[in-house]
Length: 301
Image 1 (cartoon, rainbow, N blue to C red):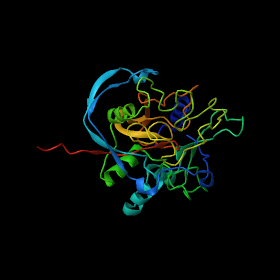
Image 2 (cartoon, rainbow, N blue to C red):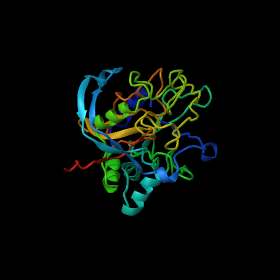
Image 3 (cartoon, helix red, strand yellow):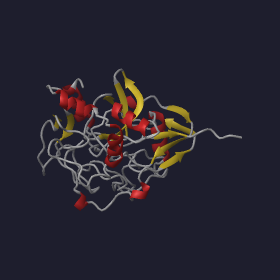
Image 4 (cartoon, rainbow, N blue to C red):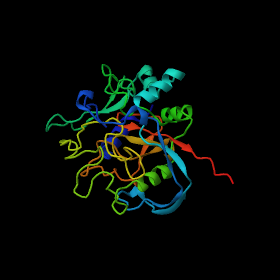
């Protein structure tokens, strides 16, 4: 894994990760087991990609048509990823990095502020921070099977998707589905906040990075499905954790969509369908996960 220090600066600039999460004893939300692994068929149609752009990378605005596909209703969970690892013996890029050692070993974690205090540079590379130990050595997935899996690279996400009989969505598919799901199609921020500015997704409320009011109920990631589904029947398309797509952003990088629980109005307004973020393909952090898509066979006469 490469170019760690610049990537941490990019993460801080993007304002989106965290290593302190609400404990299961504090959480009474999430999807029932019967809903885990379900898919929604997204019908084909036209939409405007890059609508209402805020950042330069969201341009140009394009009118596109998208073929139908299916999308998992929630982000891939720790339990789902564990089933994949148990069946295949797969070793993630973060685990390989930790085993290799060296100054660039590890995966990225973010120190959430304690009260009003915050580190100037809250990002850290932690050897041993993996999907099994999200906050680093000593942490575990106990009672966190329904949380989104994190510390997975694009390579890892694509490997899981193939094993599960699917694939990663393209950036266009992801944005099309998220746009269809907006509560108010005329308001690109309505997936994160309602008309009275109440949070309807897991993002950062307050001044990033020094104060998080946790008005949405969470300091870190939430179990999948703690927030209401969007109009397309999808959960956590906005906020919670960034999601990998299979669309390259530039050489050696892929496109992330959706923002995370650290995207704030004062610093990272990437909780909109049009928002996009580059990330090195082999990089991982505590705020990046994914969901999978499947092709829908064409209708026959």
